[in-house]
Image (cartoon, rainbow over all chains, first blue to last red; front, side):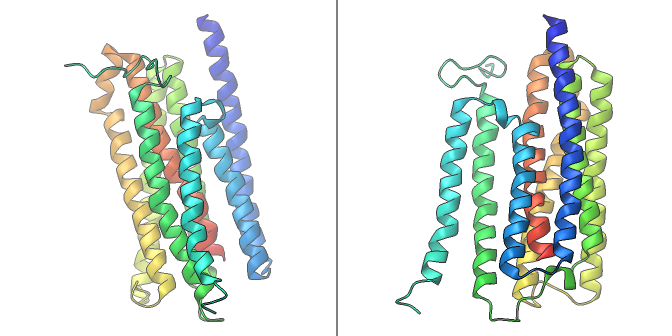
Length: 100
Length: 198
């Protein structure tokens, strides 16, 4: 049983190292993309996509979200929906055709 | 009176109290930084054409890239510290935990160099909106790094006595402090491209 648990941890450690290398590679890809001087909208989109992938890897593997309990997913799901509302409400007012 | 469910899982949530507590706290942190991110986006979108500077024209991208590498590395040492406890290797835990705290120091030192250069050139928060939100976001993030370092240093030093009496409880504490540290890393992962590269 103890051997089985230790083997599991060894496997996890190998995963952490792979994730670390991937995160480093994505960091340099982010810098490289910024050097291309793309139009603002494309640059913002690409930067956010790469950042989201990196964030997903940190949350999924380092924070163990990939194998977490349902309750945590509910808490985070609710938080993310509130965050999206915080993001969208001011944008909605900014692009309001009546105000413009 | 002993605090219940520090190790055992609660039958209703399936989690120990520490774990649910730290995730609820992190949820509130998402909203704190989320509100500031939303403010940044609003100001950026609302800025008149040509008035919003590109981050890399004012800020030091190589130093920020180095800081990203330092913080990501510290996330790995943090998770390795936890894995060492799972393997019952307390010596390795001490090593990885110390490296995590040192990486935090490294991050703050680089940030200090960056801030000093800005102040020296008169680039203060009052100069323009971009610098105001830059100092607010990175300053708040820096405070979180200091908080995380304090917790990690405590668990490396006096707090590690718990390992002798209740190793599972101690491992859970390290896991929870690690969740906070990874969150600090996660926030920087988004701050770096948004502030420095766009």
